[in-house]
Length: 406
Image: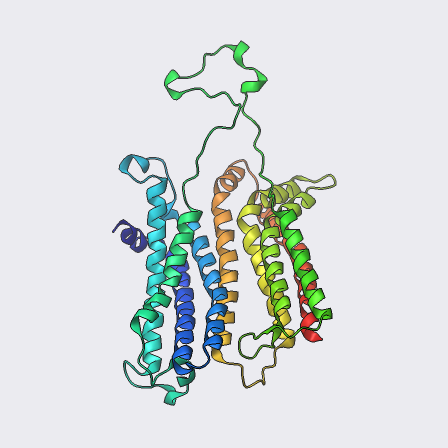
């Protein structure tokens, strides 16, 4: 009930982000139901139906990624002083956020079920003169338990991911640091006790540690793709309709490359911040560089995922034949879900980063910093990211297209 009240009383921008999650859930649920329809209509092609279901993992992962990003920016479930006194501690707020995510994704799943039943003709008759009967199995009874099981995948995965992402962390003092119990009151005003060991540490920005692992996976994926392009093998895996058949080793290389880019994203963003502050920086470059270093963990991973998706889209667009009759609407829908969720996740992460530095921005404005300077620093951060990630995306896309072009 509390999650429902927080959902209804949220800001329109928050409601819009939840609507995006529901839309992505509806599209992914429709793709899952389409695989069920294909299995019912073609019982002899069980391997093809299983492969279609396996390809639904991409839009499912993109939808879950978006749901986690939206949950992290929800101000209604953010810990605030005084909430723990009424029983709304971090664990309870995490449960509320997971429940809110489950409600949004359940809404999308139910909409996809209604649309699927409508297109099958189970509600008001067969629309579009039965043009979509190939993947709807309109002449077969729909097994409701199987349909509900497939539709429960998105809500279960999204709510579980949100709960794991927002779970309370154990905030313990650093080892070796002397702590003073709160019951002892304030420290005595004795100047002899103001030793350097008891002074607070200066604020530091955490450095992402996954950059070497991401670079290693990226290099391994490119090496696997290069090896597959020089080795003749009969082990191939068909891609969704309208796309060329690719060797299994190439798909493995693509997977490793995408994971590597996602892991290296925070480290590359942190590196952009360091480069902005190199060689006698001024106040503007210091502000932009420190902002990138602080936001590396928030926007770095969505930016790396976007880089992987963009490189894959660039490769597919170079090899895709729009005149191929095998291309269907489900392939377009799946690609739209993955691309749309990736872009929406990056924008949502940018909103989270803006919320995190709201106090710093307000303090700078109170100190007399002009708004134009803050906008210029934001533009400088964006330019630095584009300068690094756009060429990286193009290079990875060109190297990934080589095995399929031969």
